[in-house]
Length: 381
Image (cartoon, rainbow, N blue to C red; front, side, top):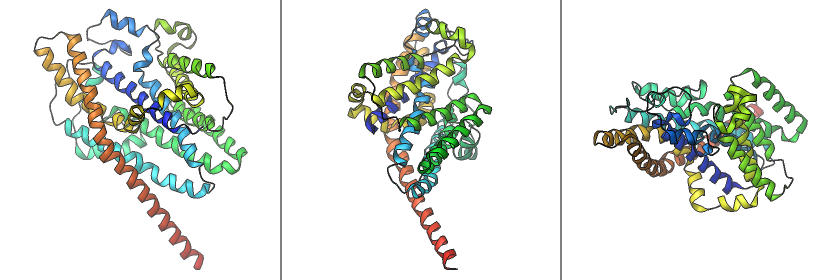
């Protein structure tokens, strides 16, 4: 069950889907059809939107993959030791700095690139919102508190997931702490599931994804290889769902406006489950380039919006001003930007993400050491 390489690779591939979603959505909002845009519409884009292959740029499906994977991987790492209490305190104390440090730097990066006045009038209206009036302390607050407390995404629209990631992690840590009393653990997760009904649906489904990933760790039964692959294909299909797509009309007739959210949620679950159960898929994903992609996936996720603003949009504007038509200008700008995102993500991962991991580990050790010393003082007294 401990398929960490394939899980890491899947995280990287899912992150690329998020990048494609935002890159393509910068010029072709028709691919998602969330709103009526003033940008030109194209027949080939409409064909893609109505196809069953839109999972290739499904950012929402990818995010649910992240959440389910987190539930599984955090459970795996938490239950490697029998000292559940110590592991719980280690995990709890280091999770926030592990997430907050890279999130902070991503907001500071956006603060810096926003010092450049980029013309965003020619791109999709939703992506124009990334251009705001930057303030340093506002960016610091957004990266350290706002994103985690309220889901604030003004400086980085990808940060809406940080609140779910942090709270979802705590849910899993508590569940693992209760591992020695399975009935209590099940009751705790059931209560979380019931209480979550009252919160916004996107957050609710995020918590459910964590819980389902947690239970995947305990599902040891083997299933036929062919069935695993079929589940994977079905999961990809669901991850491409859109409310008005012709390829999902059967579901939209039943679910209506819930089609997009529910099917992407289900798709993320099925994709992760099939990867964990299939040796065939595991062999495909267990490759060094894909594992590397997984390693830098958090960096990719955090900085790609800034790179789109400072590289993609200016290149597109330059090409349009040089006489290129909309489609070739957008594709050239997107391809160049994609490779720039990979390039800069390598260094962000090396100098920011790795620092966050190191710092959070040291912070956890310091906190636990301080706690032990204080406890001994009270015991002596």
